[in-house]
Length: 608
Ligand code: ADP
Image 1 (spheres, rainbow, N blue to C red):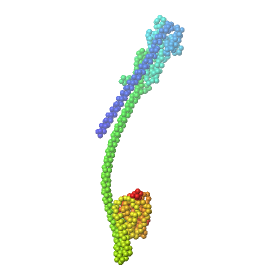
Image 2: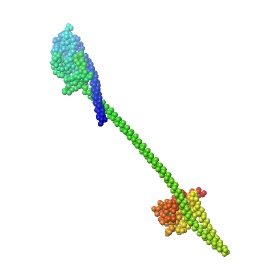
Image 3: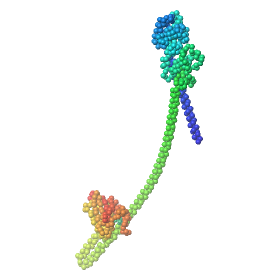
Image 4: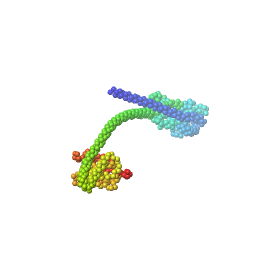
């Protein structure tokens, strides 16, 4: 509240100061303008005065010169001679035209005009008496004289110069006068912004740039005043009215307020007396334009102040806005940095978690691989178990048969039936050959699974596989058909591992056809695009689409407990992948079709 009141007081003080400043500036501007106006008026006054003085000086000595002329003096000697008068009339007319004056005329000693330049005009001066004019009496007294007034005969205003004319005896016998008009000079004052006028010693305007100001008095028109003015009949019968005015001083400048037709006007007034002419010249300059000029200066000042104030305000606002923007930018930058830091911390946390997860996943993978390895081993053991069972069956049968043949051979030899005994021995040999074939196969099966990759011709491998699978296929009554072209290129594989895959696929096919009406199993091999595709097709129940995606998973089995471990396809898939090939399962309608695609060995390696 107090702050607000203080602010109000401050604003009021500033306003008051501003108003005071503007008022003072206005005063100064007006004074300056008035001073300038006075200067201009004074210059005009000087010029006017010079022009007037020059104009009068041109005629000043004219009467004196004319009075010296013999003809004129002759007329003064014989003033009543009509011939002389006429001749002088003409002379004066000529000179008047030559000099450009208004009238030239000669008066006798009693004031009667005897000759005049305007002798031919109806309002001729000839015969008129001018003894009341001061210029006549002065000249008659022997002085050159001057006078200004309104002509009593012509009613025309003029300036008069006069000189005495002496007769042949040297006595003053006449007066010669030259009247000059003032209208021309006065006309040159009109049209400007200045008011110019001339007053006589009685304060009457005798010449004026404003026609209606003429013959008006700027002094109080008292009775004394009238008594003083009248005898010379300077203004003939012109009515003199006052010119209402009021003078006052503004510094060095004199101001004159003139009331005209109800309107008041202020003028800067300057005047100077012209003693030789007997009058005072006045110049007035209207103050309205000067005041307007001062007002314009003040208006410009106010405008300038407003512009400067607005500029200061705008600048201030802009500065404030810039500061605000800067502050906002700083805040935004800080916020951004904070967010970046937060995000960086989040990312670091996530990275850390990811690293942990990766480590965990690696560990899990390693564990899985270990588990898989051990399962592979288990699978191998299971296969070994199956194989041992098959093997004991395969070996025990021929061994029992061989024993029987040997027993019979011993009896036959005792009987001396050597040919039949030899037959028996040949049978025993055949059985031994079979056992050695099985041994050979076992050697192959026992070979390290990590066998190196090399070209493997499929046909011999299939012969071995058939032998291995022979008992199992026979047990379910399956029939294996081979469709392998003779020119099939060797595969790039490990023979033991490839055989293991084939054994697995054929074993599954044998399981699938068990009890089925059609127990044919077809193994096909085809080469194309640098690879060989081996397919094993059975005509059993096939793989249900819902299970197709899972059969390659470890431990996935549909067989009853003890019948299957669910490892065969998983191990096979791993082996095929290790060999750089692909394994897939398809629906064969009826039955299932497993296809293994492996790369063909390069020819150079075949040669090797
Ligand atoms: P196992 O034979 O011990 O069950 P496998 O991995 O060899 O394990 O086979 C997984 C499963 O795939 C089998 O349980 C069976 O359901 C299915 N399967 C494999 N081969 C065939 C086939 N030829 N016909 C139908 N189903 C098959």
